[in-house]
Amino acid sequence: MNLIYDKTYDVIVVGAGHAGCEAALAAARMGAKTLLITIYVETIAQMSCNPAIGGLAKGNIVKDLDALGGEMAKNIDETGIQFKVLNKKKGPAVRSSRAQADKKLYRERMISVLMDQENLDVKQGVVTDIVVENDIVKGVVVDYGLYFKSDKVILTTGTFLNGLIHIGDKRYPAGRANEFASVDLAEALKRYFPLERLKTGTPARLDADTINFSVLEEQPGDNEPKMFSFESKGPKLPQVSCYITYTNEKTHSIINENMHRSPLYAGVIKGIGPRYCPSIEDKVKKFPDKSRHQIFLEPEGLDSREIYANGFSSSLPIDVQIAMYRSVKGLENVEFVRPAYAIEYDFVQPTNLYPTLETKKIKGLYFAGQINGTTGYEEAAGQGFVAAVNAVLSYDNKEFILGRDESYIGVMIDDLVTKGVDEPYRVFHSRSEYRLLLREDNAEFRLISKGYDLGLIRKSRYERFLREKEMFEKEMKRLDEIKVNPDKHNQDKLSKYNIKINNPVSLKELLRRPEVSYEIIKEFWGGVENERVAEQIEISVKYEGYIAKQMQEVERFRKIENVRIPDTLDFSKIKGLRREFIEKFERIKPKTLGQASRIPGVTPAAISLLHIYIEDEK
Ligand code: FAD
Image: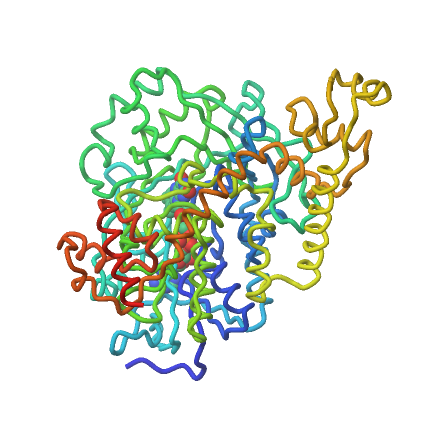
């Protein structure tokens, strides 16, 4: 018999990984009495794999979270030891920030933010069961026999559900190296949802003192580090370099000779792994013609001797791991601190969820993060935030759904709940139809009003943003209004940069030219000094045509996206709609006509029948 705890919570978050931290903070900051329960307090916000936040499209999620009032951006800004903008030479649509973290400080800062948060209790405990009455969640039970009551429960249990670690033929249950797996909770969930299996892996952590860095390619961060949060001023910690090395033919022959000992290739691992983050044995097998693969050696922290070998994940036995690592330049005498391993774990198909991340089966129960088949800290954080906001808003019968045209978080959740996953899902720029609109630089322009309305953005920050927005609008107008005549005075100015004009042109037209930067405009005709606004102006003008085209597409998209499908609609009553489509609609329960149209296999004719039916029923 479990003891009922003497305090009832508005929201309970289970698991304090990246999804759980954002979820707990968002709920508590919105004023909900929140409980965060996790297996081990010391590993809150643990980076299970690479010691880095951001990366292609992932960086966009971090910035979007910041604009909405999340914590991840500030946490990495405070604890980052190398900042880089990726794809700097490419267009703004595909630029993304990435930063190496001091892993220990990242955890410690997040723990203190959580501990200091009003409305939030943090407790250690293994949740073993969820309590459900009449398909409505009532709370959770922990291993030491307490029943915590709440009408809203968010599960963010990551790779822990029935986690099984593989190192060659050695196997042991764990949620992450040397941490308990969540076995009872997985069993409890099976009562309501079929669980499926996925796999991921991590490389060895190497002892820095045994690496010969002098023969390796150094990779420093950006000279002028750019922060994730729009509120951060600059890095707080000393900045360090990463190093690059490569596998070689010897490494590949060690791997090939021992391939039969890999649990992946021996058929022991059944779960599907992340195609975009393959193990070294996968890379060698799938790309036999490649004579080398790049390995990034990334420090795990300023005071840590551990080096993360990015690109070298493996499930091979330890003797093979040692031989293959030592075959690499610079690692000839390397010592392991921790071995590489693969992990299999259970997840729930996200098609069991509404776009609010509430389960369709159990009211008040939400899932966020790796439990939904995603991979990555940022993907988890984005979902944690959305689940928590919805859990809190649901008390007022309100919802918070980000559109595909508003954020990569919206793209990801729509993909998950509409299509499900057959391999670990990560975000990419290419997943978005409107990636020129979902840029990192304009995150506040897209999302800060939403964060402010939720009560997650301080008034002073919002007012600063409004001033910048006004500055932007005024400057865009001025650039349109000021005309530059091709007279001698102007020609002399422009000749400094080899710019020629034959007819009068507006400053905006001038700025649109590839050879003209906003800096040049400012030099001769003045302009905005605020760096953030200046960047917005430059990108908005240079890409105006493309942005306008995407906006038109968004308008078309919104026409069907805004057609809501009533929750009570009986799809079987739609005349002429094939059984196959009725079943798909009943399973996915799309919220809008747009979402219905993205269900794999659904035809325009089926959408048209559905649309007509909705209109007729109005
Ligand atoms: P996690 O960060 O896993 O956190 C889960 C939390 O839930 C933990 O705090 C845990 O203690 C808690 N918990 C679990 N069960 C219970 C319970 N019953 N009761 C209470 N608390 C519970 N991502 C990438 O992007 N690239 C990679 O290459 C990559 N490789 C990975 C390799 C390994 C070996 C692992 C383990 C993960 C890897 N990941 C990788 C995934 C990345 O770590 C996750 O996507 C991310 O951490 C998911 O965040 P989350 O919040 O969903 O879960």
